[in-house]
Length: 100
Image 1: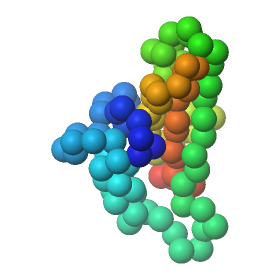
Image 2 (image 1 turned 120 degrees about the vertical axis):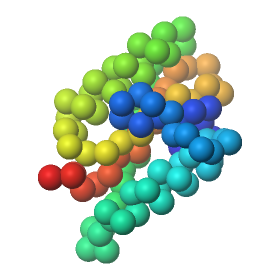
Image 3 (image 1 turned 90 degrees about the vertical axis):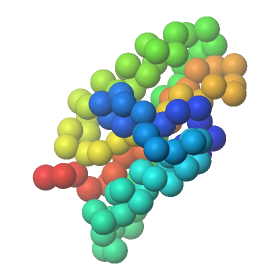
Image 4 (image 1 turned 90 degrees about the horizontal axis):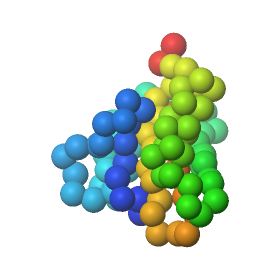
């Protein structure tokens, strides 16, 4: 997440108040930290959504958001479009524990 152009929350809004994506990722981590559990093996998971070169990045972002909303309802997540490769890919960071 730290090398991506813009980190966005599940609702599509960018992480605000930071000047670069590394600080955005750190900010999200700090926001989520109070909900982390010392009992969990993992507190967050990293997922990757990838498409072939030339695919519309906005469509891949929308698809990634839709998958996360469908498959992980109640879980906090952020998405980031990685622009420094030929093929389109979106990174997702999702909390391991739901809000429920």
